[in-house]
Amino acid sequence: MVNLTLNGLEITVEKGTTLLEAAKFYGIEIPTLCYDEALSPYGACRLCLVEIGSPGRSKLVTSCTYPVVEGLIVRTHTDKVIKTRKLILELYLATCPSSKTIQENIM
Ligand code: FES
Image 1 (cartoon, rainbow, N blue to C red):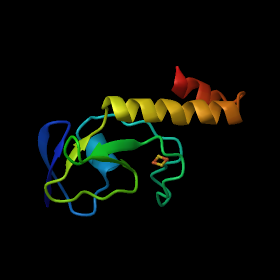
Image 2: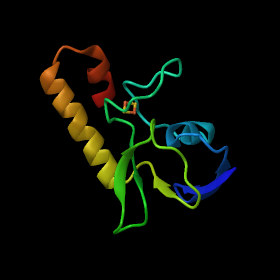
Image 3: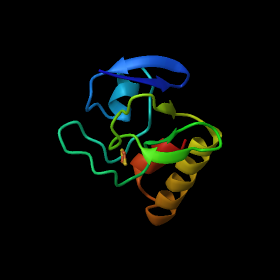
Image 4: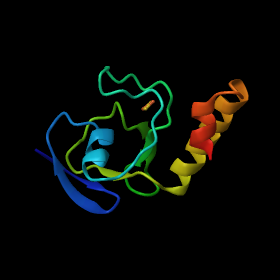
């Protein structure tokens, strides 16, 4: 078992769990586009970004591919995360302006 902090909550999950799976298990919703439980995650769309590490020493990682690590601090909805997800969606929308999936995510 692995202990970590998710949005300020001390949680425990099985080793090998991804950050996305841990968040889902604890009822925290993270947007995804390329993730499908039936497939191996490959981190292509970047929409599932979360911030890991302590403030001032943090970085963004894709939660669908990043495994839980003992003592890790994870934040799923910081300003940095929200702004980056929004930018990614805007870039997708510019590339595929008629995509209903992207339009629904951006609303
Ligand atoms: S869901 Fe697409 S990169 Fe994680």
